[in-house]
Length: 146
Image 1 (cartoon, rainbow, N blue to C red):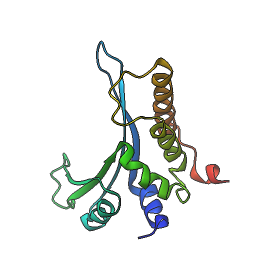
Image 2 (tube, one colour):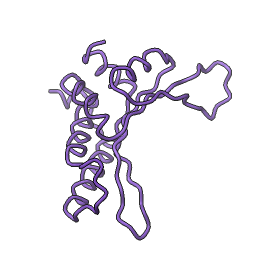
Image 3 (cartoon, rainbow, N blue to C red):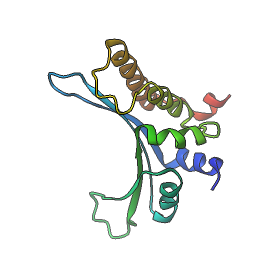
Image 4 (cartoon, rainbow, N blue to C red):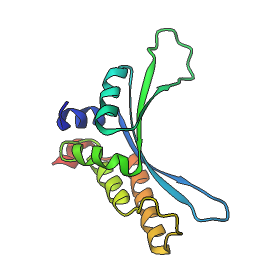
């Protein structure tokens, strides 16, 4: 499969998000998650074989007999960077979301358990807020590409 194919598939079926977890008296934490859902598990298994991550059954709350079983491929943090970098030049609908996610993740130091600085916390929160705002106020893709 080509990066162009994966980009088109991700534009239609994928999701990129920065999750924010409030830690009470400690600083909030953030994590990048990329996912793609489909009823064809085989295509998601190819993603897993190529980029890593996991494929899991996507449980639905519906008991509608005519709904096909669905699957979700998920990849997190630095592991998601290779996938996002491969598809970024070809993505249309989600190009801006991918760019924000890459900006966020490139500033994260994996395996560092030391507290982050106030400026780094502000940078992560800025990426989180921009991605969240973009998702709720997404311009039409044709306007974005033009």
